Length: 203
Image (cartoon, rainbow, N blue to C red):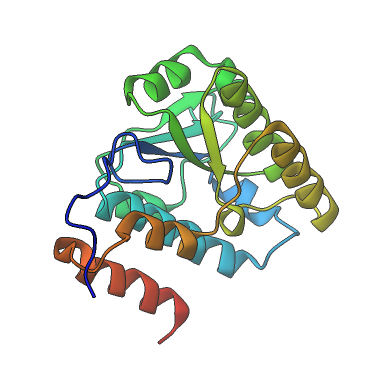
């Protein structure tokens, strides 16, 4: 058995590839994490850390954003993400909807990618609002559902439902890492793949 001799073009592939997608992480700050009621907080932090590590492993362009840090009303991104992505400078905003911040939108568009892998807190607000705007501007949005959370299980579920109705394409982080890896012949990322998967899954 063998893979096809000709590899699918990673730029035009309809699936996610390291060459056609960007990672967007919004508002993973202490207050937001502590207010999540739809998923255990420890699990949420472990999952978003795995997502950040996936972005780094596959060298995805990463856009990281915070809200109200410069105004003093909020704290910076949680250290688990910063530890993985120390060279990514957060774009701080005052707008609740990140897509209504000029610097944020400019950074997303500067990646040159049309497939956006997105995670934000809360699901029903800081994920839904910019995702809907991105979809409206022709981007494909892949919300990573097990890396986000809402102020209640119902709020989270309704947020996801609204995204799906608008054309969002939900994924989970394990599904994502397998989609990016795709073939064990891509040996460079196998050690990192194993480290991320087995560290979080507890194997």
